[in-house]
Amino acid sequence: MAEITGRKVLAITVGAFGVIIAVNLLMAFKAVSTFPGLEVQNPYVASQTFDAERTAQQALGWSLAADYDDTAHEITLRFRDAEGRPAAVHTLDVLIGRSTEARDDRRPEFLLRDGAFRAAQELAPGKWILRVEATSASGTLFRQRLDLHVRN
Image (cartoon, rainbow, N blue to C red; front, top):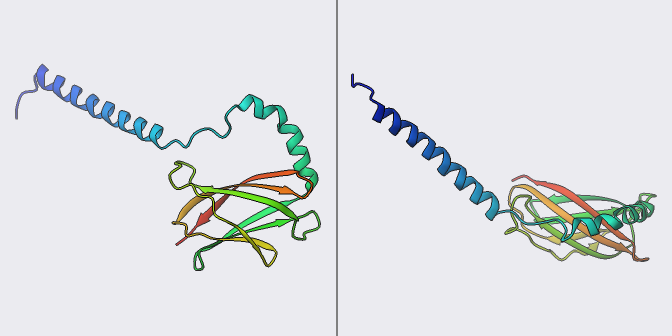
């Protein structure tokens, strides 16, 4: 068996720390390069109207459910009012993407059919996030973020 010298111990230590540092740098680069960005440009300004917007949205009494049909490749959004009937949505904007990166973000066109909004969209398996913004006929803004799990 070979004798362990100070140089061998130094080489093993430097090699081990070199691998650790290289992996940390790689992971930091990947984290920063795939970060989609901020939710809002200025969080302080957004916070000033948050309570009023939330109160107005709650007064609408709307609820929202999302579903994905992986056979038909279709996303369905169902807005309901306080009585459980289809809500009268005036405008609709939906951003679909992954939680960790922005390259898969898309804005499909939803069409109202059979009391629900539907959009043809092929989604890969995994977790998707829907950021939904809708307005009522009176102009009240309704915002909700939904998680959508696609199985395939």
